[in-house]
Image (cartoon, rainbow, N blue to C red; front, side, top):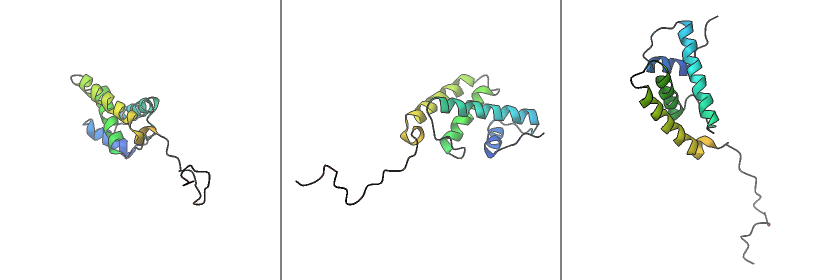
Length: 115
């Protein structure tokens, strides 16, 4: 059974400079992506869109820190941790998107009356 590849998997394959499409290597890349997404989610990041540039960058840094870049692994991990912290603090990435409450134009319960 062949591993199901995604666009993000292919982006990571390119970022990691891996040309092999071996099923085991693809599974390892996908496991690394999944671990990164779980780590981001664990730190309160709710917007985990695989097409978002900052999420792609976070996954790239995470994968590079875990995937054979031993001489620069700590540098990649530090960059990942910094980006993760910024994402976690950003309202765009850490808040659930909810619809604004419906307010009637004739709402008389507000405190903005001129009386």
